[in-house]
Image (cartoon, rainbow, N blue to C red):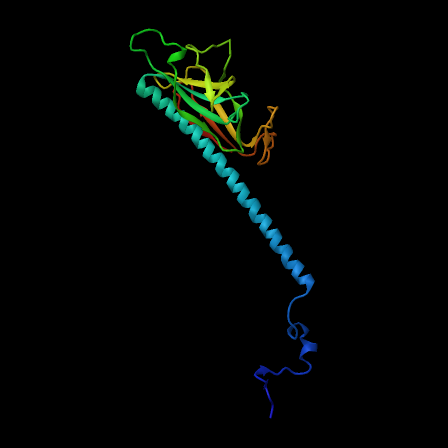
Length: 233
């Protein structure tokens, strides 16, 4: 009688290990293990790179939306209060907010009818700083200290976390919502940073065909109306 089981286990023919050697032994070889580990490592790197790109794009999109919302708030504030409202970006001032921090300042008509002065400017809320890894690489706002077109009344001394801001760029909305200047204004945000001691931008999300950032978020302000336009690649 053919016995198919011995001691409760399947009885294999004597030739079975020779015909199917990989079924007649347990475990895997070192080469097979190395192949599996290599595949897992490659997949892990691919997933990490994909999520890193998504994270960088998300930070840029969030920062761009924040600047656009600040510009919209500045225009609405001017219309609602019959005031002038300035959108200011900190420039090369030696602070942690250089080319990343934006703030709003307003000046309303004086009740006594006297001309407003520098001391009549007041800040609306706090500085809004873009996340690390996002910086402005192009901005056509007016620059502080521009003697060719001085601001009147002049903006006050600015402070960022207790530090005096010597260099900044700004655009001003009139009480009717239009810009104080006759040309459109824009600011472009990118994934990158400015190394200490240099104004050159190091891009961290690749460059386009023209050498600039492959991905960016540009906020345009129309001079005649102060309305906002968004430009994305």
